[in-house]
Image 1 (cartoon, rainbow, N blue to C red):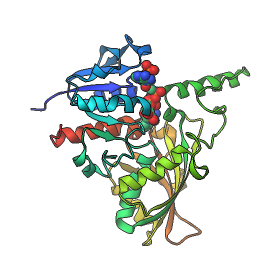
Image 2: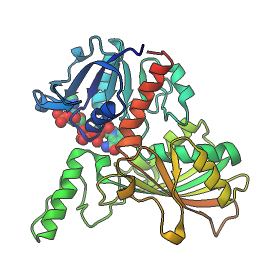
Image 3: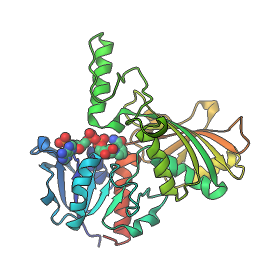
Image 4: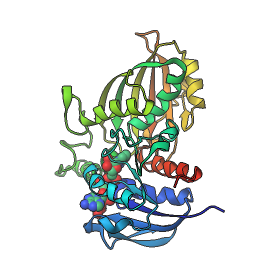
Length: 338
Ligand SMILES: NC(=O)c1ccc[n+]([C@@H]2O[C@H](COP(=O)([O-])OP(=O)(O)OC[C@H]3O[C@@H](n4cnc5c(N)ncnc54)[C@H](OP(=O)(O)O)[C@@H]3O)[C@@H](O)[C@H]2O)c1
């Protein structure tokens, strides 16, 4: 008989927290108890799970007694402050912030790509950035077959990747501008409605942003290969949900367009929609709410014999966040490592 678990969602009121709640219900994850945690501001708010109301409680060090899985979806400083305490209390922590991703003692896991890394967890498991996840899911099968040498990627990232307040900001700015009213800016450095911002996170080394460096470093860690050369440009676009990426991939051994289509169509968690004559390709509006990473526009790079261009779209709140966290939990339960 399947047993149930005590699950805590840290950041339950946030964009990812809300998606975790709805996916736990959709996937019928077996639970005996559900603890919803957020800041003091949200304490007492009620959230619905499977038709029942649950209270949100303030996150404290003592929130984790008897918790078996703690799904952390808060900013990195809160994860650093409370994640180790949750692990010490006996919970397996699955954290989707950047707090522990590059810690050599913490596995960074995409369930279809490197599930073996879970074996060495010591109580904390990190979940990658929402742009890294779809990228490594399409790179892995190509790397195994033809060795990926170099990747050049530009992202088109939705506002929900920056949290619930960012979604409100795009909504409010769009309405205000359509009504010729004044707009206000608080989450992003500039107006996001009717605009594109070539900056996600703060600028760092060599003029690349934190988000751009995360994609490089996390890809190397997950694929266990630092030799892949990468160049990244991350852009915020006025789309509510789903991140898109234009990707150029150079391989050591030549892959035809047909080879790439076949490899990706067979890859777990990846779906190919690629019929240019019928204008069929993945788009945020068709990928919203879907679990798979969708790929299209697969074509030969005109400037390089051993390189392919493609376009991918993935729901950042599902595979880019809540879904991968729950899949990690499901794998641990299936392997009885909880
Ligand atoms: N959004 C995505 O697509 C995505 C994808 C992958 C990873 N992530 C990562 O997931 C994390 C959360 O992202 P999000 O988009 O869900 O952000 P969000 O919508 O802004 O939600 C933030 C959550 O953190 C809680 N929180 C804030 N301060 C707190 C405190 N002092 N103590 C306890 N809880 C506190 C908030 O609770 P209150 O409502 O009480 O303020 C809210 O539940 C971030 O680290 C982000 O990088 C996000």
